[in-house]
Image 1 (cartoon, one colour):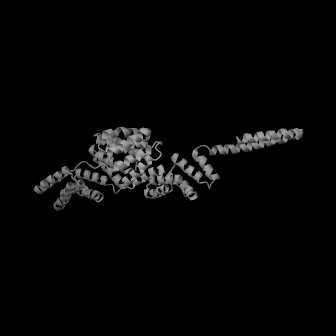
Image 2 (cartoon, one colour):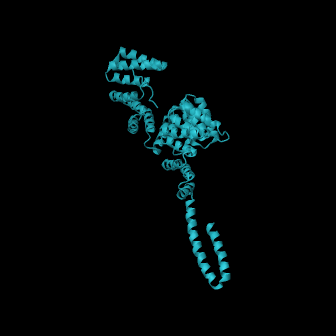
Image 3 (cartoon, one colour):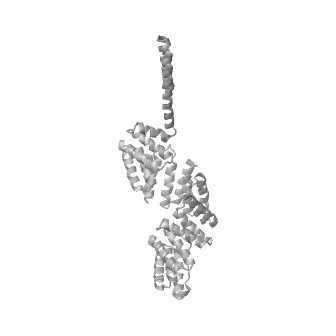
Length: 409
């Protein structure tokens, strides 16, 4: 458009010039028109290249207006929307805040990205600062709620998320309902959590995270058959989501479909080979499917990736017990106990490993501790199981009765 305007101006000049100097005006202006049009055509092509996407538009804006906080902010938003790695977007929000420390939008987005990168305490600092500047900032309340969930403070999160729902009620609040679902689940209110997650899906049916979250909450609430559908929808919407395949495997396992669970865990590992939870879960399933050596390989891989994985230690110990290697099993039970000292079942199985290692006094002492824990937790069935084992072991230690429950998942 700019080249066209200039061309019209030159053509107008040509007419004026040719009227005064008929012989030379045409030649001079013809050359001028060609030169200027070519120059502006090149400039226009450069500008069009800069406007290929929102990211390039705002990169160009930052280049030409480096002291404009809105240019840096908008570039950060464009980078987030484009799914770019968060580091550059965070840098742009930080630039915006150096230029305008009161920019709540930059604080909101910086807090969100810090939380996504596992820096939740820093996120809380930025988001609380945003709310000091603008107490009715619904986005800040929502992002702060998400950060508080990550820090293990679900009740504080619920307060902020409810506030986000009250503010600007005309806007869809699918992400707020999503976060409320997780916070309510963490406080033991599964039914309320499910209601909010279903509302999130009604507001945004193509949100894979909402379907995934509903599936996980349903599975954890003892409804694995109901969880399978939302999790299948999650992987349909987001086929490269390893976490969703892992959750789908666990829900399938809880419905009794071990073979299907193994397939889903294997798919999760194809997408994310260094995924310790999926290696642990696949190891536990392979044990059930009668493939102990393959199970050991996956459990050992899980522990190399995440040495403090209590479930992997427990599952590996269970396999070693099956293979008649109680001393090795005992080491892994002890590691699981170090990580979960209040788990009565782990303590009970460690007692059995001591018994099978011909260390009777240690076995009895540990079983008594396990019994006390089970009784204190109100787990009557496990307490009765331990008490029966103790009675049998004391009567005939050589005929140890093994009462190992299912591998943890």
